[in-house]
Length: 515
RNA sequence: GCGGAAGUAGCUCAGUCGGUAGAGCAUUAGCCUUCCAAGCUAAGGGUCGCGGGUUCGAAUCUCGUCUUCCGCUCCA
Image (cartoon, rainbow, N blue to C red; front, side):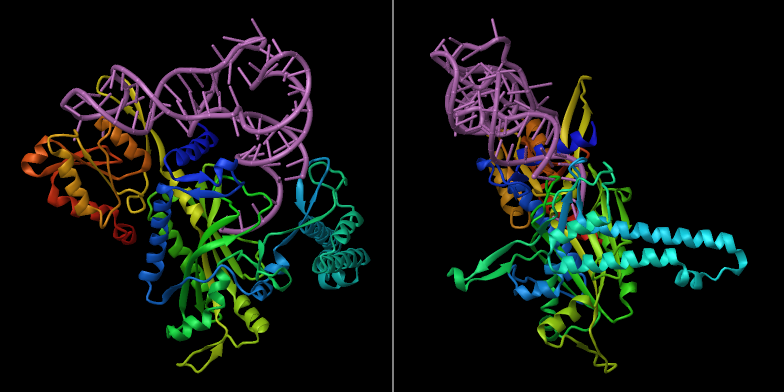
């Protein structure tokens, strides 16, 4: 089975067993929007709790908040999103490929820089020992010419982008005679602007209404509350603020199931540190976060770091944790050293001082920030794609059999226990109900008496239930039941009174945190 | 947006030459009581994505349209 087939099966399975449905399906669906079903919401909630506990419960110096999705429009000016979240796009009509216009121009500039380096190399060979590189760079006319061209183009480009002047951007591309890397032609469409932020209006009367944006990231809710939390919580640097919440991006193309959606959920923690210590903490959080992923037990080879060479406007170091999805290694989490970009920018835009006063040293400074930011939906997809297995079984009579099993880590599994009376008479259902009543306050349980016992086991395998408790005739006599493990399919006979202990050992987060 | 593929029951699909809409699985009820799917009986479930055209008659031919999936772009 190819990875592509596997991915398709996973999507079908997710729908069939109530994990993930296309949004508004009875109206033909809405592109790149999905709903979580009865199983999906449990899985997602468990993932969120695993993250929240690992951050907030296990660290004295990390606290949580839950900020609103609507924020003051000026927040997005301060954050840079109003400026930087606009992508100018252009298509080549021959190759049918789409490019970011600004990237095309940047690449053109970079190629010119390479030409300069070649000139320098040539000269170095020609002059040998006596070569004065600095002087050559300053005086060589060819280099000066290229430099001047590059400077002129970047100035024009910067102006065009700040003015949102798309015809000018196109003219720059034409003037530079930039060709499509695929088709090699200059047959371009117009440059069009795509704003990735959703907007809406607050205020019921149209003329009084103010445009507000749905937040494109949750981080700003933390930054604007930095002083509130620090002061009311008496937090001392270093400390962190964690948040789980929805964010919205009007992606031009959102694809690959729930990997890239227009409405998605993030789990973010912003860690505030002394300036100069940010890279130490950056490394520390990289390691901590990787450990969190690996504890799930999908195999260390499923993960890798990807260090960013090109950094966003706010960062001085950045790395991704990538997971091997059926469609390749892709980012699930980003760890960014955001410097003091956000807090200083809010200080400037709001006119309020956003400083931390260190009572021990008497210093006052704007803290630096190390961010860990993970996509909840991508975690759900990660768990589902790692857990989904089609297993070949050999039956006793030699015939073949297959089962689909979701090997979800027990702590994350939607249903923890299925309680199954072997037959639906002789008092067995009543015993099953008693057991469920004793477990349901702590664990999501399912009761099932329909169909043969084997079929019921398969149904539970398909949704990843780690334990099936089966009540048989012996149970009525000696208060024992069999407990069947999802992964091994092995069964053990245990006293009903032992169930709670066995289950809690396996499905608690304790086991993950111990690793 | 451009290019490619696809839309028939909850799922997977069949549907011949244009002639009353089908199967398996799933679901529900009943029977049977059995520790690893596929025992028996019955039932429910369809605007064949949508709209126009051709035709006595369209799931089928034709035109249009919508939606989804894949690629290009972006990122959590």
